[in-house]
Each structure stands twice: as C-alpha cells, then as structure tokens.
Amino acid sequence: MPAGAVLPFWLDRPPGEALDVAANAAQLGYPEIWIGEMLHFDAFALAGAVAASTERATITVGPLAVDLRDPVALATGVASIALLGGRPARLALGASSPAVVQVWHGRPWTGQATKIEEAVVLIRSVLAGERTSHDGPHFQSDGFRSALGRQSAHITVAAFGPRMTEMAGRCGDRVVLNLVSASQVAAAARSVQVPVAVWVVAGVDPTDEGFHQIRRQIALYLDAPGYATALAAAGLGELVEAARRGTRVSDLASLITPFHLESVVAIGSKQEVIERLGRYQEAGAEVMVVPVTAGDPGGMRTLTALADV
Image 1: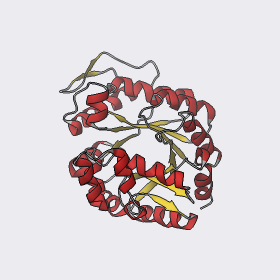
Image 2 (image 1 turned 90 degrees about the vertical axis):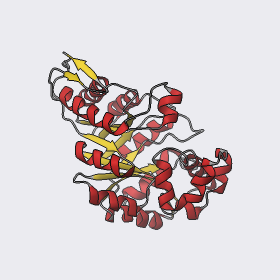
Image 3 (image 1 turned 60 degrees about the horizontal axis):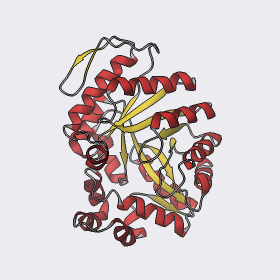
Image 4 (image 1 turned 30 degrees about the vertical axis):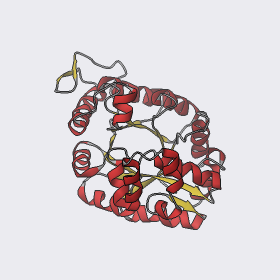
C-alpha cells in the first residue's frame, strides 16, 4: 500500500469530492492523508472536517505557501488539527508560485528558501510551547505563547532544485516532491539526510475523461517556476517551451500524450500502476497517491486496487 493519499483538487470537479477521497482512503486504511490548498477549501477548515470524520490516519496539512500565513498562524492551525482530531498532525510548507502568491494574494514572491527556513524555526518554537521572541528578516513575533500547549512538530518542506532541496533537507523532517520522475526522486534522496516523499498522480484503468483530467492539470504547471524545470528534466521539455511561448492551457493539454506522462504519473492497468509506483519506492521515496477521480468517483477504484498491494 502507498504510504498515503492526497486529496486532489482537480479542475471542474465538485469541491466536496475531497471529502469523498478522504473517506475512501481512511476506510481502506491509508496511513496518511494530505490536505493541500488551491482554489477550493481553506486547508485547515478541510483538515478539521477530515479529522472529525476519520480516526487513525495521520493528517498532513499542506504544502501551504509560506507567504500566505505567518508562522504563528501556521503553528496554531496544525496544533488545532492535532487537538481536535485527537492525534498528532503534520504540517508541510512550500514556495507555491508567483501566480498564486503575487497575482492572487498580492504578496511578494522573493527569497523563498530563506523565508521557509526562518518560518520553520519560528513554527517549531510555537509548537514547543515557547514564548516567541523572533525578529527575523521575514517574520517577527514577540510574546506569543499558544494556549494549546506543547504539540509535536513534524514539518515537511516541498522542494525543487538543488538550493531548495538542500534547505529542505537541512530544516525539515521530510522533503516532498511532486510531478517528478523516479530518477529525480533518487537524486533528491541521495542529497538529503531526511525521508523523501513524492506525490504521484495515479489512475487504475483510467477512462478517457480521467486521462483528460490529468493532461489539463499538468498543462497548468508547465510554465510554473520549479515545476517547469523539473518537468523539462523529466522529458517534457518541448511542452515546457510551448508553455513559455504563451500557448493556451487547452492547447497544451491536447499536446500531452501517454508517452509524456509515463515518467511523472502512474496510470494504466493495476499491474502497470503498481510497477510505476514501485520505481519511486525503489528510488527511496514514500509514495503518496493523488487519485484520478474523473470516471472514478472519489478515486475509489484506484485507492482500492492499490490498498490490496
């Protein structure tokens, strides 16, 4: 069984589908449920709903953009999920992208590596029950002590590129990668001394609708910082160049073939998906499945097939 399941936020799907995926993953015994944030629910609100409806799965909130919540708010959020859910909760941080941070939220997108590292230090101090006394280049907090008490601090850092990966391995408890090949995972695993997790889009016997769902989602990442470089290195270089020339997302999606997807997602028959996920595990990663849901409500077919492994 994969080490966890990720609640996907596919385009043109009902937001409530995330709760269906969470319920299915919990029912099938997936050890960890990841809850990110994009165009749908607030991540901590959704995590609270998942914590209330599940009993055993470890809940990881994120990766959340380090620019959109201050460290005190992040620490308070994950501590709240831990207490309300009656089990330790984990936090994941990342840089996100200029489109999300600058265009959507009007925040500056600069100095991401140093900003994340500073945030991790302050978050750990809050979760340790300490009174804050921090005056850094990016964050300041003085005199705050959480009334929620001391909580465990497990912080995963999302990374792309050598600098971010080195920083993530230095300050995080785990590094997470997304939309990368097994060889890229292996390179990251060799460069850090902490566990590496990887999000892998997976679809067992996907329908045409499911295949289109994957293509459209990946098309959005072809010109995103970090993702573009990683996808080019994984064999999608001509698509990345097309995105940089300003090709429309719908046209980019139509150019994506199964050959392009082979190195960065796991779709096909049950055996084919298992083999592809196995490559990531052999590369040294904990595999977190992002289930395809179009043509597979709540990702149940895929989650069930992989739970049987």
